[in-house]
Image 1 (tube, rainbow, N blue to C red):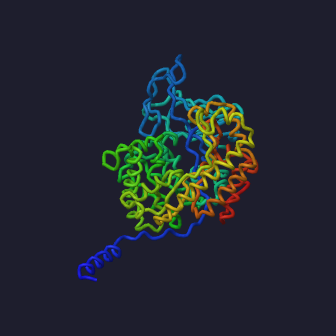
Image 2: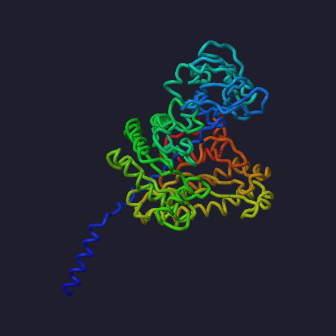
Image 3: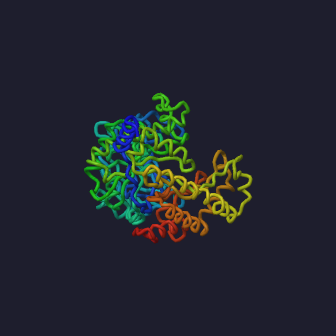
Length: 520
């Protein structure tokens, strides 16, 4: 070997030895997590005993005008009506849940300030005093409607609470419905993507965040303090999605609040927004524009992939600094389940994988039915339930398993855990297919079939065998519509034994060692 060759060899060895090395991911530990259904007046999960927390944003009404045709409302910064115009009132519906699936009985209404509140439809006032009312609720009549008829501008009505029967003494210290807590006891993780209203979020600064004294959680999302409290009560790791527009100050304050309030034995999953790769969402279009501006790529979708990696590795160090390291953090790089190429582009961009812990996918068992797709609406409308499930078993399930295996190879290559940010069945009409009533009825019947539970069992075992880690199901409890049958149950009072999806999922969680309930 010449002297020059020796010098070159020494230089190469030095580069190799000094290069940062990404530690291999920890051995996989499959566990069930859950995506919680988002805040809305039609939320049938009923997480809160104060149902006003999920009231709709105020609707302005004017005497003699059509529904919602009143003038713009004068709202304070927390969303309370500070003043009403003459012959006008503000109105909001609560518990717009069909079929009577919310508790009947005497609800206690509390409020601060001076004015006049009325109720109609499913609720009738049985007693009233300043700051306190009792209403008798009959869910068979539909939704509760609350009307704010008058309010004193110098001491306007605010802090309205509408408390379910039996929780008047405990709602302040324990805001959660016990059926909700019992249902998810034992899950490993709660993904708060929908609770944070992540898709299209307009949150930019810490001052923009939802607060505990907001009029409702349905306009800006559930306050962080409540999400942390729920994670602590259930001993479940929280999964937070940082809004795509949020500045570094927001990220730091968010992380500091979590550090101060979350029980120290819990871990935190941190993700930049949600599905930034998915062009249907505003955050993807934003990331594409920013990525192009920064010169990451010319094609907006490629620019979005790379911007997601770029912004993620700006967010992760803030959390690491606040937490004094990464021991309690799971730093998530999400990707498109069906395309391992996209995953490579994200995790390798500017070596993002070196500051991450997990590659996250959504390995749905997919059956998207459109007028001109495969399967088409015309074809699927002619199926029996068994034929629909044949498609799920023979086409969709193997396809999903192939995605999982391909993504595991990418995760292993870069020393990352493979986790699922979402997953479950994905039987839905799209691109106009959702408007076929016959198709919707078929897909919902398939979701009720015992065969769906069998397919779920095979899917979970394939996830386990492939080396998958945390699997966050999408989603918890929600009614089925033409837009999809996402809820693992439809209502808070459903019999779990009647849902093969629920039973199969919880049985898998038990095999993973989780103390989940099959009956609550």
